[in-house]
Image (cartoon, rainbow, N blue to C red; front, side):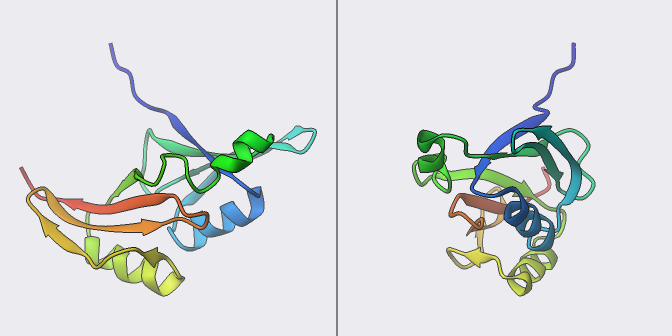
Length: 131
């Protein structure tokens, strides 16, 4: 049996601003953008070269959901963006306007720095050390 996480929903305030940020700042690909009617869209973005896991950008539809925009995990790092070249992506993201919350650091598991998305969700940019 094979299973995998296909999509992770990220609550956003606006589809178009989220698409612009994820594609421009993170360099993600827009995989799908389908009008579902009633102002709802099926919007999927993915890191370049990603085969299985994608982000579903889900616009907040209720006050409770809107309250979670930018704080889906209570301030903890939410997602880990793995890369094969930390410094390439760190510099490109900085130049594109990504907000890093700390300086890059070397850990036993790899090179890492915390950044936040356009709404404030915290992410790790991570290049794992070879096993």
